[in-house]
Length: 321
Image (cartoon, rainbow, N blue to C red; front, side):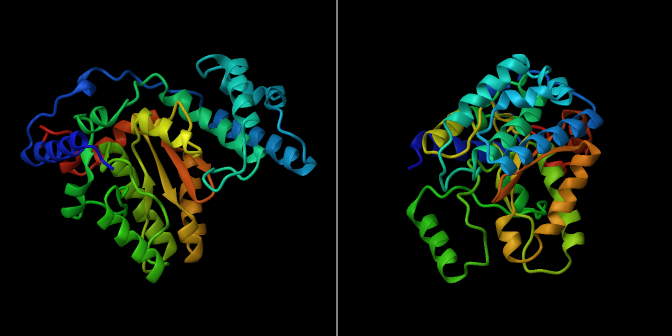
């Protein structure tokens, strides 16, 4: 159950957003500067090498050996730029893969698919690990860098849909009823940890939603976002429950999102979104990871300014109205 202090923080945050007064908190301290990373061509070569290694492992039925990935110079060229370098990164990945156990809560079906997710996630780490993550509820909800999604939704400035994780019985009962009596209406997901997002992510997700709508054609749904911002405390709690919640994570700096795919597959429109997201990846705008039920996307630091300029005017930090 949500703690009273956390509820008060949410209400206080909403009031500040509506009134336009400055928000204060631990996150007012500088969060750091993101790295630029390799070129899109280098990242494409890295992804190709990762695909090649994982496909061979799956074909041979071999136990994933992360050190085999290091045989590819395209892989080392990227991992050497990640904090700790190639050897340290692969040692951490080997530990994660070695501890893998199949679970409905895991994004990976096999050790090989987990290896692929972990290797592709290093692009996120390379881009955003120098930015201080949000540590807990107060850090997220007190940040002046966040836009309040319910306000944007009321103003019809969101092109995508979401729900916030249900913490009380009425909301849980409502979700249960929808899943039982109208199973195709909404995806089965726990929802956002926090009803906030960075303005640049709002603009990005709005743009993705518009392109997806054009590509998919008429259908009764729209882009659905399962996750945007998480604190490291939330991420650690999810890991303890058996979910594939990686650390460090771009969710914890507010620069990533998980976009629902399984629900779109049931409606026959997933291929349209896959094409849209793949195009963003090819252009170097996003890192994109297929995680089964959802596709994880992470915004390239090089394009953050562009999307901040595209953000709805009311999506800026508190005090900037």
